[in-house]
Amino acid sequence: MKRCLVLCAFVVVAVLGFTSSAYGFGFLTQWGSTGTGDGQFGGSQGAEGIVTDASGNVFVVDRGNNRVQEFTSIGGFLTKWGTFGTAAGQFSGPFGIARDATGNLYVVDSFNFRVEKFNSAGAFIAAWGWGVSSGAAQFEKCISSCRAGLDGTGDGQFHSPTGVAVGAGGSVYVIGDGDERVQKFDSNGNFIGKWGSGPGTANNQFDHPVGIATDATGNVYVADTDNERVSKFDSNGVFITKWGSQGSGDGQFTSPEGIAVDSAGNVWVTDANADRVQEFTSTGTFLAKFGSSGTGDGQFTTPQGIAVDAVGNVFVTDSNSTNSRVQKFGEPQSSTPPPPGSQPPGGTTTGQRAAARKKCKKLKGKRRAKCIKKAKKLPV
Image (cartoon, rainbow, N blue to C red; front, side, top):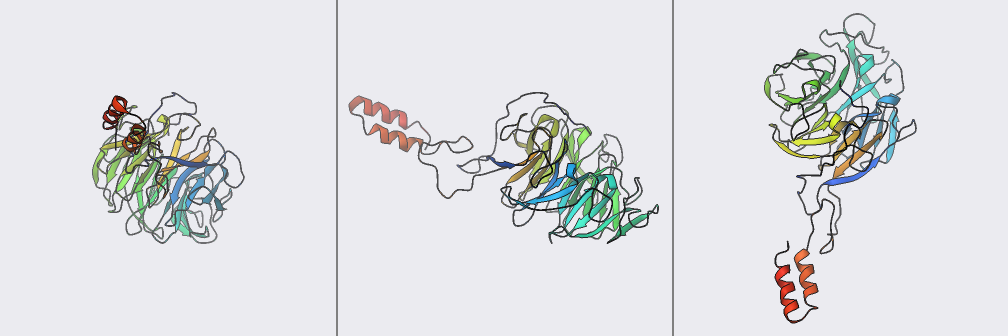
C-alpha cells in the first residue's frame, strides 16, 4: 500500500460543511503518544483500526505493540489485551477491527493470516484461516489451541488481510491489500463467498484495497487504495457504484485507506497521503473535508482508521510515529449556549445583532441611528 512517511505538503484545509448546529463541528480532543505504556501506541504504524461500541467506548488496534486497547470516548484508558505471538489471542501485525450487534470484536491478524474473534471484554472466542488448528493446508477454525495461518489465496485463506467489517445479519467481510478480493463469512467464521480480483481497474477488481465498511442496509464499501477510489457493492458482491480518482481536489484521493459509514448512511474516508478526511453521501457525492499535514489539533500524519459513534462523533487514528494518537471530532457537548457575539467552535458567531444594538443604546443622536442601521445588517 502507498504510504507517505514524510510531510509532502503543508496545505491548510478548513473545516467545511459541518454546521448542523450553531456550535459547529470540529476538533474535540486527542490522546496517545509513541511508546509501550497504557494509552500509548507503538512504532511508525501504531494506532490502526478503530471501532466504537454502543456505550461510546473506543477500541483501537495498536499494531506496533500487537494488542488492542480500549478507551472511554474522551480517551481514558480502560483495558488492553494481546501480545506478540501465534497462540490464541496473540497477534502479529494486527490491523483492522469490527464489532457486531452483540458486542463481539473481530480483529484481522495480518501476519498470522487469520481473523480472531473476542467478546467485548477481550476474551478470546475463536480464530479462522487456513491451518490455524493443525497446520494443514485447508480451511480451519480453532477455539483454544491455535497457530498462525497459512498465507495464500484459497477460499477462507488470507494474504495480507487488513480490513474487516460486520454487516446486517452478522456477516463478516474481510479484505486485504494483497488479497485483491472481499471474503464473506458468517459470525462463526464459516466461509460463505467471495468477490473481486486484481490488481485491476474494472468494477469488480481492486488494487491493494485496505479498508472496508458496511451500512445499515447491508451494502459494502471498499477503500480501493491504489485505484484511488471507493467501490460500493451489495451484500453479495454485486457492483453498485464507485467514485474517486487520483488527486488533491474534493472527492479525489491520494491513498484512501480507512472507511466508515455513519447512522445517516454517509461515508467517511481517511485520505492517508493527503492527511485529511473526506465525507460523502452513500452514492459518492462529496460533502465535506477536514485536516492538513502537521502535529497540531485536527492535523494528521498519515491518518488510517476511522469510526463514527452513535451520536456522530468521528474518531481517527493518526498512525505515524510523529503523532501516534487518536483524534476525536464532533460538536461540543454543552448545555450552555455561548454568550451573544461570541465565537463558538466552527467559526459561526451568534447573537451579533442583539449585541450590537445593545451597544447602540449607549449612543445618542446621529451616531445612535447610524449604529442601529449597521446592526440591522448583522446576522441574528
